[in-house]
Amino acid sequence: MKKSKKIISIVMAVIMMFSCLSCISSAADANEIKEKASKAFSTFATKLVAGILTGALDTLNFPIRNNPSFVDEENYENTDFYKGNEEFVSEADENNVWMLGSSAVSLVPDDYNSGKYFLGGYIMIENGFSNKVEDVADDMKARIIAVDDNSGRGVSLFATIDCIGITNNDIKEIRKLFAADFAEKYPEKKIASINVFSTHAHSGIDTEGLWTNVVGKVLKNLARSTVGAKMETGTNHEYMEFLFKKVAGGMMDACAAMKPGKLEYAVKDIGSGYFSNKNRSSASGLDTNLTRLTFTPYDGSRGTIIASIGAHPDVAGLPLTDGINKGRTISGDYVYYMGEYINNYGYDFMFFNGAICGIYMGRGLTNDSQPSTYRYEQSMRYGYEMAKMALALTKTEDEIKADAGLYDQSVIDSEIAYVERNGGDYTLWCENWTPVDEVEVEPFMNIRLSTVMIPVTNSLIKMAGKLNLANYSVIKSKGFGKYKINVEIGYIEFGNQLKVCMVPGEFCADLIKGGTSLTAEGSFSGKDFEAPTLYDLFGEVTVFGLANDAIGYIVPDNDFSMAIVYDHYQEMISLGEKTASSIMNGFAEMAQELS
Image (cartoon, rainbow, N blue to C red; front, side, top):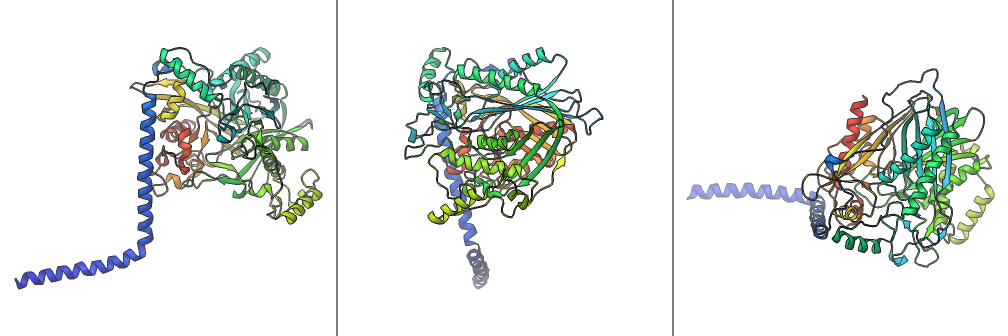
């Protein structure tokens, strides 16, 4: 008995010793435990909401018939696809020279205020859930360049449309029109690729179909689905035909304008102050570069500036509660004003948006506490400032201040005086400006495109497809309720100076070169993202987003959460949790093929 008591005493002493050590440790790690518990509860709650939401959507989806336009996987044909260059080269030969032509066309119809056009981007309570076009603030354009290195491997076309997005099926209609006209006019020449992008402006006429009389259309198509009748198209069919012809015609104009010249490249990190990561705190990646290609014709004629940043053009379309700005006004947003300023400075203008998943225009440094009545005035300030930066990349601060086209002291003095009278902050964009070097781009271009099948697992997107809201080719896989979308990805080399990856949606910047949402610790799932990044595959690259399709948000699989919460709203407008890995694995196959 005494022996038993002794053993018990020793055990209790050991337990008490470890308990004391544990208390000391727990006191030190209390915050960490609290944070882990909070995250665990948040994850559980979000998964619960996601499960309920998905279940509800699946229940609603179940009785809706498949859209008659859906095609069985074994019968799917990918038409009007341009692969790009069969052969990649690593240097220019003696016959190579840059050939480039540019054009721009307006996409605003004469009867824009007739009541049959809708803005794509917002359906909000402030507008009474109506977004019929009422006015035009500036313009909705397609900007186009035709590029060739004179190697005989073919010309590549690039068109960027001021719109919320345009589907691959509709892009193929543009390709058909252009290719027929090109073959007739230039029978001896070859097309390497035809690429169409969107700026993702939230204030252009709806080119996707998700905002065009959406409530009435859903009800009509639900009724038609029950009897197997043909459903209404998502977009305004007449308007899309108008757009196809205008863009294809602009492509022909760009080809006709092609001239030999010099291409130069410059890039500058303009800082995070001009970008706002508003809605995805798990992602730490942020591309703050302003990229510029400048084409100068040898004959001394007007050159072309090709610029790229990554930020949503979403401000001009936002309604205000005071009723002055109703959010029903066509605008090209900051891209239009960036182009206007560069045009007035003496260049044609081309724009590509970048990786914009959750990334918006940071207006704090550009609004400068100045007055504005309409939202597009804020877009104007941002666009003008981006234009000045693009034009000034290689200039010193003194050179900028000596350039009347970039710097007007009287305007600056007036703006500062306003701030002094009314309060606020003022930021001079060129203060402490550091120029960057510009390099000439060797005259050769490589381009390659391929296709990727992405499973559609988002029940909301399945419903949109069944109700014919957007013009996608939905592919039926084997098994009940399984669908896929075929998308395009692309890779470009401008000489040895600039590499570009073309992605078909709003790309999470972490996928470019890494970030917290790819890690187990920083992601929603607590697991690592298993696919490579673009930097892993190609080295330093620039992203051109919403290229040759508009499939919504592309977020890492491991950070995907289909729930209505602030940090994960992007998932509501995504094909599903396999989107990012499907695209990145497609790029991996492409990199392997090109190596």
